[in-house]
Length: 193
Image 1 (cartoon, rainbow, N blue to C red):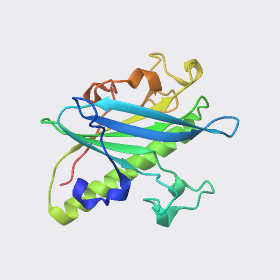
Image 2: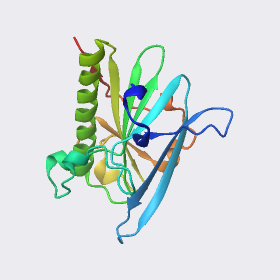
Image 3: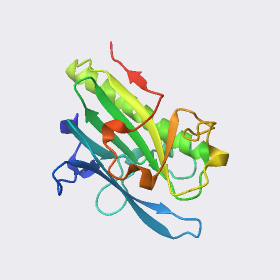
Image 4: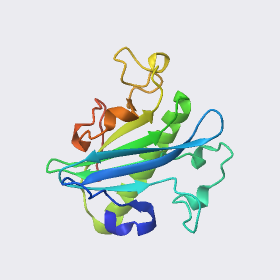
């Protein structure tokens, strides 16, 4: 999969420690309009790579450059990252959306669902060209700086009330958490026949 994406959309893993880590970095808009950068690094076993879906600016066009009408249209939504993680049992795909303190559950669900749509399309395109039939195990995550998640989460305190397939994490909870240890009880499976 990594070979069909151009390098401008891939993010390099952090190899500065004895264990390779996925390195996710995103600038998030705060309530006052300023931006703050959040970085999440997660070690992993096996093979992993990251695709940044909403890359924008500089000389790199966004991955969705042909759908870039940012006027609230459904096709303009996208999640921040897709991490592909190959383990002996399956290829896991983790969709990540970064947020500040402000949580809009409807927007989070829509952005992650757009990532699911992109991933499903990408999977089918690969199948059509290669005839490969590998399954993908897909999970959705939203990361936030908000310490008071009560109004937004279900009775477990972990899943978005509006969309219980989305697992919420505080940024600090992910510090050095192994990629395979991400918790999400909702796993979607994509298979091509």
